[in-house]
Image 1 (tube, rainbow, N blue to C red):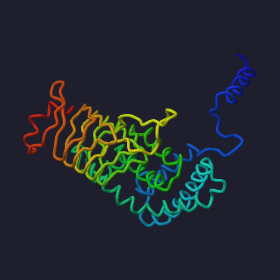
Image 2 (tube, rainbow, N blue to C red):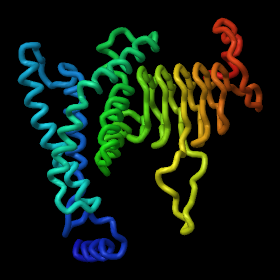
Image 3 (cartoon, one colour):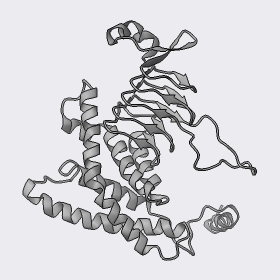
Image 4 (cartoon, rainbow, N blue to C red):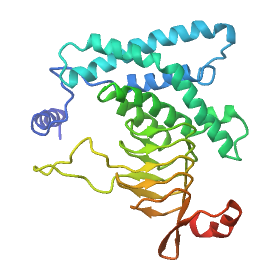
Length: 305
């Protein structure tokens, strides 16, 4: 097949099948620009960790000044694209305001994310230093970008928040929707395969292992058969909860009570009271009150992988 024939077929496909990026209108946010935003965000959150060259303390103010100026300009441009895509005819002013307000949240985000780093260090005996956590643990990138994207999500920015968390998903294997509400001291050990849905809520001091899903049980449909948007679809997790590898917890009305443990490979579509344990014993799901910690060792082969 000659190039001219391929070109003609592609042009016909663009017209018939769609999937073309608004060539005659506004372009969507750039994936490369979003990746650059993600990298700059991590440098602002953790100066000295992700730069190509050594950063000394006396140069930090100038370094942060340069980063902030570049970051705000790029963020405002990508927000403007997304707002124009959503139907705003003159989005530049609002985009600039949202970018400025989002950057103003960075100090508070840093304080919050430091609790996540501390939780990872305290929760993993293999961790040798805080520095190792920041540069080598995938949860730091995934959670940090989700927390930043959550701010944009709260401002009603389309596209950009999801693109940021999808960059983190690509890098880490953790798929955390920007709409998810996550408390302090959040730790995802290993990370790969974790899925946290848009309407999930997670309390303080929660620890997840690889492969955990906080997902939707079913979708409410409108009269035309389309999924209803904006309803609670994903579980709530109370504070001081541990969820072991490959557990699947589904449903907007499913709540894991505080100080509970969900064992590995558990499939859960019902709520658990506080201070309880869920695990499989043979083919049967057991949910029982949590005993004193020493007694749990005897059960470890049943509910942890």
